[in-house]
Length: 135
Image 1 (cartoon, rainbow, N blue to C red):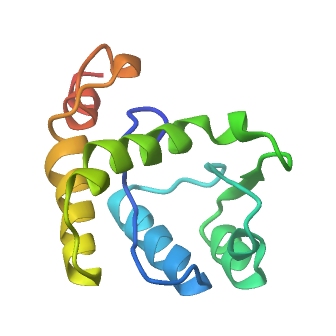
Image 2: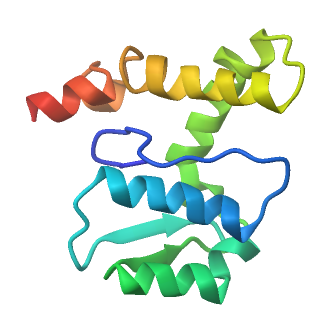
């Protein structure tokens, strides 16, 4: 999530939480944005985010890693809020029958609703795409 606009710029989905999963999301995010040295990327303290492979990718792109303190969910409040909305507004409302259904559901929520239609109070009640265009 780009905290400026609350736009989801990189995401991935799999049945297990692996380094490949977060690297896929990272690569999508980097492809979507011009990365300038000094950019800070914040994550929780999950083992995948602390891996040498992932940390090396960040440093190669000139990105400064940032991690919240253990047990402090407020550091990840924007993402925690997003995941709660994703579940309530999409996942729990569907009768998903496997990985393909789940992927389609998440894709539609992020790319066709959240980034393009869903208004955010932090964005002057604009959706992330429109907020980026206006500011």
